[in-house]
Length: 201
Length: 180
Image (tube, rainbow over all chains, first blue to last red; front, top):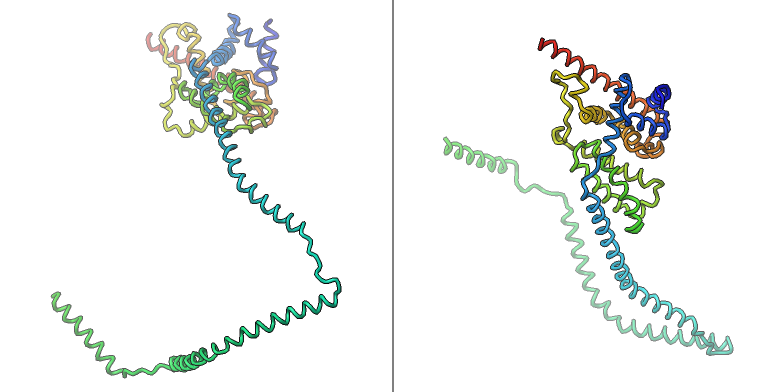
């Protein structure tokens, strides 16, 4: 590479517009040997960059990284198969209940209700008769419970009394202690305080 | 993504990721830690990894974030290995007392001290030879912005380097004067 080309490429280099190929040419030029003294700083720069690029980690790093990768993949594959099994186990009761629900549904669906009466009039009367029977028996049942009301009657009387007492409580408050006696009480208290003070002295 | 594909995709990136982390932390052990952490994060992502266009950009983004987080929580600079090259000089001429290794250290220190995102951009482009799309994805910028930042950063590095060279020569002359 002649001096003119070198200078042109260097100018481009400092403008940040050299291509990778041009930078390789510069690197090659400065690495090849002696350069004119005015290019010595540039040579120093390129030499330093090249040396930085030849830095290598210790030989053991590659192996350590491989171990990291292997350990990670060993753990994740183990976890995957494990979770697959637990997932299958968890699905069993779910599937069973689903089958049960579906089975019941289809069973009920397949059972068609069949008519007992061909004539709607008789069907109506029969239904009415059945309902009347239910009604009559129901009334019979409640009649036998009538005495319960008698039991609850006294309870309502008690409630009345309680209500009156409640009203009494709502009456306005009457002060049973006149003002004079109250003051006496206070005096007694201050007297006690005084004796305490005397003791302290 | 199965274990085999994961290894094929990400293991070849580990050197690059290491150098990126080293750029920020300047400590070999810590940089390796960050690479391991990045791999753990990638593994944790599981199938989400498949959704990314560029696995390399994803891995570099994670590495960068992890390293920058560590840098933020680091209490003192002394935890790193950062050793700036000495600028006090014996009587030998500069090109003798600064051998190439030390010169590389000088540029390295200049780049290490850069602000983000310039530091990431120049590292990804000039050390790793990444394309602009990748850099844009990692730094969350547009390709145009990446170009602008790259140009500005390259100029800044050279400028700082020139200053240091002149400073070094100045020092040299001074000591020479003092000796005389």
